[in-house]
Picture 1 (cartoon, rainbow, N blue to C red):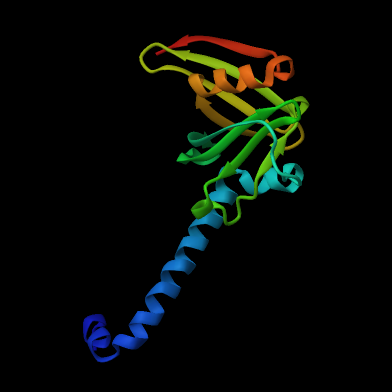
Picture 2 (cartoon, rainbow, N blue to C red):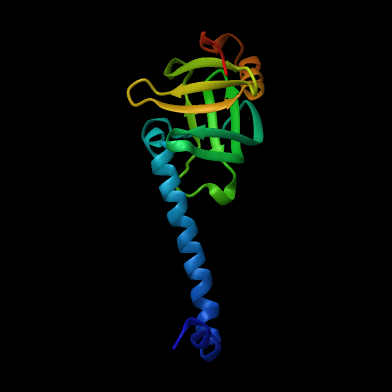
Length: 159
């Protein structure tokens, strides 16, 4: 018996099994992304314990290690306490909100000849994880962080 015949003979079972399968797969993928990208490592030290109070931008993008792309699903904020990172609700499994203090952050700005600028934000001193964001988002964060923003390391133009 192939899958289609099974579904035709047992539609109620399929109606229950498919959502369970889908949710399980969603949670598995979210776990793999958290582990591969480094979010899980960061959450061991920098989990936000109180609600964030500062400037916040939703729908932002960033890249972490192993080319993990958080495309338009990040909430990124800055306050005097540090850099805040969270994901939108659908992506929050294994991605607790983070608040990384400014003294645990290094900034390197890189200008690309063709694509503009991006900023590498290294989070954590003991177990560093890199987050790459656009120069535009970094400028907003720097403005909100004001005097707390770390000194930037500039890297020249690259192709």
